[in-house]
Amino acid sequence: MGHGGAVWLAFILMIMPAAGQEGPRPPAPCTGATAMGADRLREVTPEGDLVLETAGRARLAGVRLPDDGSLRAEAFALLRSAAGRPVVVEGRPERDRWSRIPVVIRPDEPSPSADFAYALVEAGLAVVDPASSIPFCRTDLLLLEQEARKRSLGVWGDDRYKPIEAGDAERLRTSVGRFVLVEGRVRSIGERSQRVYLNFGEHWAEDFTIVIPRQTWKLMGERGLDAAALKGQRIRARGILEPWQGTSLTLLMPEMIERLAGSRLPR
Image 1 (cartoon, rainbow, N blue to C red):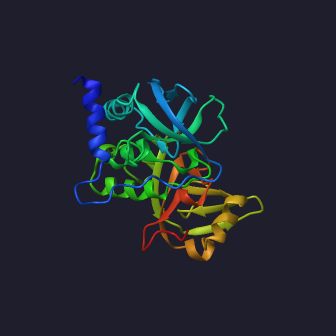
Image 2: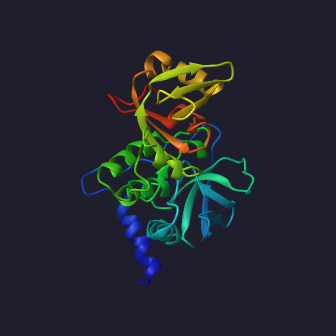
Image 3: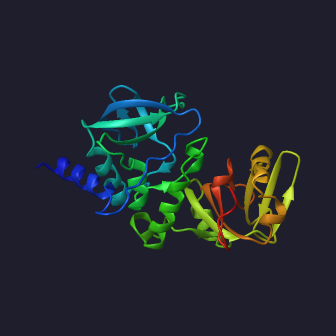
C-alpha cells in the first residue's frame, strides 16, 4: 500500500465507530444547502482549497486550517489522501470572490461516515470558524473542538492557537490580522444605533472590544443574549482580530461567542 493509501486508510479508521458504538452521524443539511451527490477530489491547492471534478473549486465550510508549519502539513495530508477517491458532497451554490463554494465533504462509504471537517477538528487540525459558513449549522464541531482543546491535540498544543486573555494587550497586538480565540469578562456594554460594543477593560478606547452589528445583536436577543445576559459574564469569542481602538473582534453571528462561566449560551 502506498503512502496515500495508508493515510486514506488511517482517515477511514479514525472516523469509523468503535465496535459496539454508534458512529458519528452526518450533520443535518443547512438551509439552502444542496446535496451535490458523488464527486471526486482532484487536488488540494497550496492555499487549502479543494478542487472537485464536478463541482470545481470549493472550501470546507465552518473551519480554518492551521496557518503554517507541520500541523498544516498534517491537515493537508489528510485531505490529499482522498485525492482521486469517491466522495459525497453537500454545499451551497453561491461562490465567493475566489469562485469557491462552501462544502461538507465525506468519504463515499456504504454507511454514513463523518465528514472531513469533523475529522480535522476532532484531531485538532482545524479551528471552527462559524463566520466562514453562513448560516452556520455545525454546532457539533464546537463540541469536538472543545474536547480537542481539553486534550491539547494538534493546534491546541501550540501556544499560538491557544485562547488569548482579553487583558493581555501585548499578545493581542501581536496577533492582529489573525483568526484568534479571546477569553475575558464583559465589564460594560455600549448600545448605539448601528452597533453594540462589549467592553473588556476600563479604558474602552485602548482595551479589547467586541463589536456587534445591530442585525447580529437582534439575532442574539432572540436567543436570550441581551445585555442583561452578557454583562459580567466570562465569555470566549472568535474571529479575525482587528486594530480598532485597542483591538477588537466583530461578531457576525451568535455562534461566534460562548459563555465560559456555566453552560453554553442559549441557542
